[in-house]
Image (cartoon, rainbow, N blue to C red; front, side, top):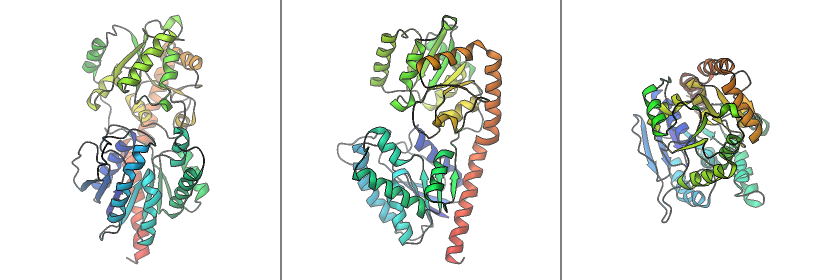
Length: 396
């Protein structure tokens, strides 16, 4: 099939939605489909046989866009939507696949032109508007909610990241074909980089310290502030433990360093800054424990699957964004408050045999349910269903 893939995101960027798009595109093209992608005018170029990348027009004064809803994103969505609508009307497009807010308008031309529409819900738009404070009530939120529901009810296939959102799609659009597509790492296997870990240990002056590692952005929903506060409450038995935080913008790091000094965790918290993808294997190898302190949201974070694949014990908060994937068999879960998180981190270091069992169980479940091979199988099967529906509609 010839797929028009509409992704109002910088592409490629080393963060959740763009990486997920890359994995989906790689699967599509490897399966023999040709894809024309429209994305924002920012990001690294990607060479992939069968993929053609087009970019929407630049807007003067906007050089980039961050994570989540913003005024800049809305402005960028205007030229994006105009070009997307023109592309939808082209001959030769078999399927229109729209990511996040592109789905709020792409279902209209898909329906008018009688083309299968795939709505890729990497996040729930109305939830994002409320969580960010961008639109908590009023006509803008009501319109977004109506458009989102119309997209679900019109789509030949709705793709969600986790089962919670899939259940809500089924409630709103009972006849929808819904694919729960958990994220997956880019590599088929995790190969530890002991030399790289030793290099990082020296670079960060960690000595023989035991390390709890966090990786990811420092946006408020990630709960990094919660982790810093927990670091201050670790017991004396964890005197040699260091919380290594990988990621964040310089201003976010400065704010969290100030918080660490304020709560008495400056010595425990080691800020490594944002690192390129090729360093992540070494960083994960460095970890004795991997931490995800996310405090809100419902989409399971991509890092969870990377953590599972790495074979290290996982400490995570007991919130829906985690518990859709993690349970007590494969992770050590803590209530999302500093004291509980500190106690769970301490238990991970105190009971090495339990931590090892949890890590091994997480790796086994990853290989069974969340591996790149399973990700590809799910995508190919879903595309086959869309192709069959298209053929039936056109009498092929």
